[in-house]
Amino acid sequence: MGDNSDRVLAVDIGGTKLAAGLVTRDGDLVTRAQVPTTGTDADDLFATLMALVETVAPASERAALAGCGVGTGGPMTPQGESVSPLNIAQWREFPLRARLVDALGLDVYVDNDAKALALGEGWRGAARGSANYLAMVVSTGVGGGVVLDGRLLDGAGGNAGHIGHMIVEPGGRLCGCGAHGCLEAEASGTAIAAVTGAAPRDASMEVRQRTGMLVGRAVASVANLLDLSLACVAGSVALGFGADFFDAAQAELDRSACIAHARGARIVPGGLGDEGPLVGAGAVAWRGLGHDLGVR
Image 1 (cartoon, rainbow, N blue to C red):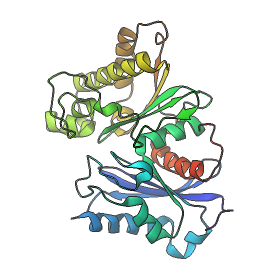
Image 2 (cartoon, one colour):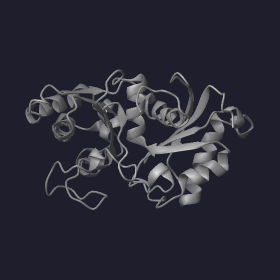
Image 3 (cartoon, rainbow, N blue to C red):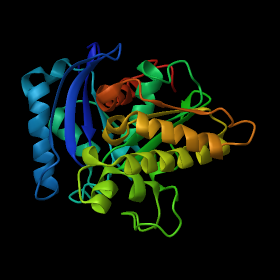
Image 4 (cartoon, one colour):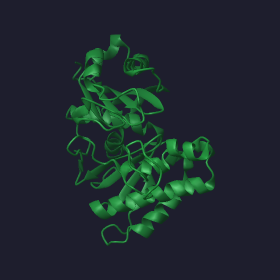
């Protein structure tokens, strides 16, 4: 299966777009492509994904790849044997890993997209050299991955780090998970569009600052609970809102993380920019193949 190759196929599955690329052993993204997340049903969406993969890794060239790594929205069962992304209605208990193994003929490793980002940020991004940090995606949805003592937390089903489902506004908007006031229901791109009637890129200063404030509130709770002092935040909403978002997030973190071990915690933009999801998916593959990323 191309065990000696220096490249893996990286796949990022999100509620708005699907992306694929090739990532080297050193974490370089050497080619990439993306398409909208479209499909009338589960098989149609999978066909869209496979057509995308063909553009970056044609079937005739896949045997030279070391494997495939996937970052996808959750929840899921361990190793991505079954995935049910809240933002992808077509896939409920979809057997993603098995379908990819059959279609690609490669070893396939699947993890939550924000956990994948956490691996990438620790490997090549803003958390490099840090043993304790949180990585977040604030985009169509809100996800997170936690690294403690140099180890990525998995949890019982591989879903540890779901910061998007921390309650930040008690009694707030109904979330897709069924609760009210989740961070995802208040601060995601989907929520912003539903409340304002416009795309997040057109959001007012007030909305940008409130979004940052809510993220800072959630990060403060994580810092207080888990004794970590760094949060790397990426995703189209966070990075698109820029300083308005990050300044408000840091101010709320400073207000709310007051216990000694969390005081001084920082929120920074993800160091991988828009390459983060695919570098993270590549990291999932290299980790599964036994490559040392600096994060276990």
